[in-house]
Length: 425
Image (cartoon, rainbow, N blue to C red; front, side, top):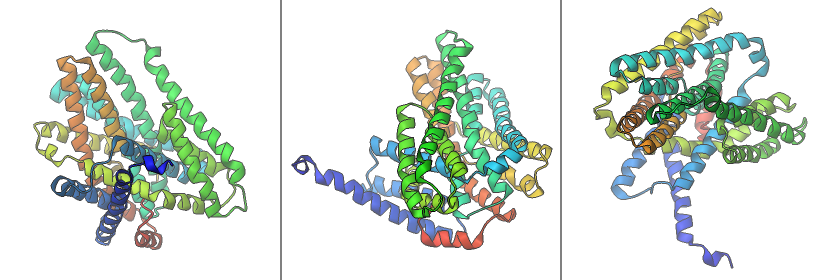
């Protein structure tokens, strides 16, 4: 009865396209992987190739807004879980001061240098503070994907996972503060400190409560003696619930899932690594689609726009800030020599969070309708869109080089991972 009301062609063709897209992209990623290209970068290149095909032969068709939302937030949720689950809470406790010092150093290094570089170049301090706060973020998706692909383990990998779990939070906090200030500045009104900060505090607290609550709720089904596959079968839908509830409550999806993964891996007694790998395999098609979508939406024509000099200044200033801030604070924290040499070149990628924040500012500043606000909005989105394209190509290659130089790449496991072609997170 219900089937008669369904347009089967409209429903089944997108499913067919998704299957073809994933297989094509994974094959290309595997071919490039044998030539030393990280799998995440192969998927992005596949997305760029599919964009060319879509424009010239009409296949594949662009995803609908609903499918785009599901892929993006679903992937970020599973990536957040993976980051949290791989964090070792005991090491975090032992080295909490050092880890926090490096986190603050690399984030604020980028924040400060970008602000001064953009501010003195354009003399637009509103744009400078917005770009500076976005510069704090490191892409959790592509960074964790490279670490996972090569099964990297060691102090450098652990520190990078800690940083990508939390510097996005710093970026979101500071960006929201400066976005609220920017809107009040363009509108000629003033907001109190409480009106600016309270929504951010509520979002962070909500993410923390949701992640812990769901992990403790799932714990009875995640007990000792349960096989890894059975445990993963419970964890996978629980992550979907966490993603959905975070979206409905308008709190951070990625932070909620980071806390969920960290809490569950801390309280559970079973073999966590096997369970985490099981969840990563189940979620690999969603994550693969996410990176394909990044490539599919890249606008290469923006590389020759009038804002190219501004973009280069932002990219160089951010890289310099990350380099100086991470190296200086890692030395102060007496990190191992391998970390000192390799951390500064491991934190350059930017993607979903940066684009999301820029898009948020773009839409809200355009609504103001004032010419100066519109100019700021357009410049902000152009700079972030192109800088993401640049760092998503260069960043994974530098990260792979850093992990290999630090001797943290597990060659046997990474070869198995590439051969399977499934575990892209």
